[in-house]
Image (cartoon, rainbow, N blue to C red; front, top):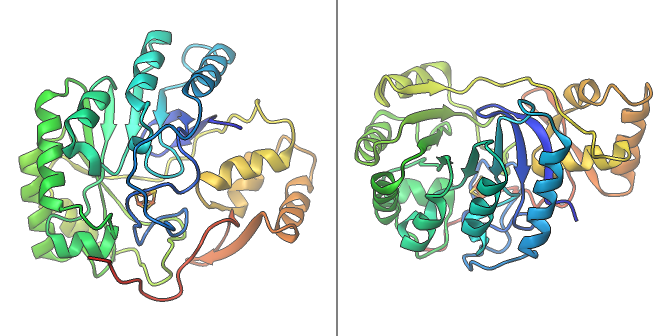
Length: 322
Ligand code: SF4
C-alpha cells in the first residue's frame, strides 16, 4: 500500500510530498466540485484506517531519497478528508521530528470545531481549510456535508484555531457559478473571513472535471467581483506547472494510477509528465487501463482528462439530507 507519493507540483505548495492517511474518498463532505467522485456514504468517524507506523516509515523513506530543496512541503492531503485519521496529530509531530521541511495539512476544516482536532493541527506549519459559504443553505448546496454540521459552528472553529495556531492559515474559497459567486454570498464569506483572520485567502475555481456535470467555473466578471470583495489579501490561484517525481514507481501503469487516483489529469499533461518512458507507452498503457476498467476518460471544457475509474459521478442534482 502506498501512503506517500511525489513530490508532485502543487498549485499552492510548490513541490509537495503527499501523504494519504485515509482510504479513497473517505470524507464528511460531498462537494459538488469534488474531483474524486461522490462520497458514498458520508463518514464522520475518526479512526486509524491504516497502521500509523507504516505511514511514517514511508515518509521517512521518501525524505531519505530526496536532496534538501527537492521537497517544499510534506502535505497531509488524502483522497478524502485527512482529519478523519485519528492519528493525524501523532503523524504530524513525528514528521516534524524527522525533518525541517514544513508540514502542511489540506483539510475541509469541518472538524476544527473540535478542540482535539485543533490541538492536533496546531503541530503543523501550514493549515489550509476551505470555506465556500457563510450561510447554511449555500453550505448545504455546495459541500453537502455530514447532516449535523452547522456552518456557523465550523466558522467559529476556524476562528478558535486561528487564535491558538502559530503557523500559517490559508483559507481557500472555491467558487462555483450560480452557487456562491453572487454579491450577497461573497459579502457573507468576507465577513466570516474577517472573523477567522487567516494569513491568506485563496480563490479557486473547478479547473478539473467536477463530480457533478452541471458545475461551472464562474465567469471572469464574477471572479473579479470575488477578488474585490474578499479583500486585498485575496489571490486567484494560477495553475502551477512544475515537475513530477516518479522515481519511486516501477512501471508506467503504477505511475498513472498514482496520479489519477488523486485527481483527474489532462492527457496532454500525462504524456508530457511521463515522457521518460518509451514513446507511445503512456498512450498504450492508458488504453490498457481503460479496457481493464481502472481508468476512464472524460472531456471537460474541451480537454481530454483521465480519471480513476472507481469514482461515482452524478447525473442529476443530489439533494442534501438535512
Ligand atoms: S472536495 Fe475535499 S472535502 Fe469536498 S468531498 Fe471532495 S474530498 Fe471531501
